[in-house]
Image (cartoon, rainbow, N blue to C red):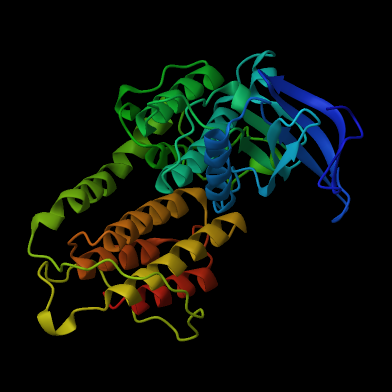
Length: 376
């Protein structure tokens, strides 16, 4: 392809930005909506199965709502004169430079390193919650933009056998590369969501204006000490999360696989929040309808994604809530026995504990109301 090529009589290629193997990334123009875009054209040998997988991955990524995820606009396929089919992806155009280019000038200040990796970890955590593994996290797949760090390559297929644990190890390696300091041993073996939560609480004194957070009164002397303090604070949460993973061996409510439906957003105010202390065994007379619970949780997850995208929910609480909600939603959808009342009580408690800076009051009311609709 050459500059000036038009795809679907809409996307005009302007100039080549990058090339990886047979994949080419172009700066382009959406002539229908009159906006600048990036167009990634994949290899000319993409077979039918590979194209189908790319399309499914693009659909999944397009549903992710996180400031660190590149917005996907469109997917298409173009047929060359020789009959070869080449898939392409249209995304938002990103200004700035890659993290690899920035690191050639030296490591980042501690707070800037924390800001970059926190954003990347948050985006990866949201992807993991949706069943997407990146597989190639590194300085070359992180773009530094005026709006913060963005993760590149989520829509591409990772190496065969790639697991979420591989992304977590890559995130820790990225943190070491950015800061020039060893990651505390206590952070190893954690999850992307926990890395994002830990780094989101590190002081942001030296971060660029676009990534700045409100300054805290007390500073931690070193980056390593800051992370250690945050992890100590997160220990109770990690214990609770671990208990939630195993607690479903108690007497539970078997929920049959429901049919997914979408209902209008609630208008009623939520019931008063309470700490998670309900009985572990559900009351027979209060058995919730599975389809209703799944529908409410699906809308809750979308509300969390929108809140994170608009800045109404910060990364740390947003990733935690999204992960907990998605896990419960998937279990209910699969018919896995769960203690719904107990799990909803913990979600309600987590929302109630957020400060107005963590979760905007109006958004908090909406989330609590959606939880009330689950019947848990």
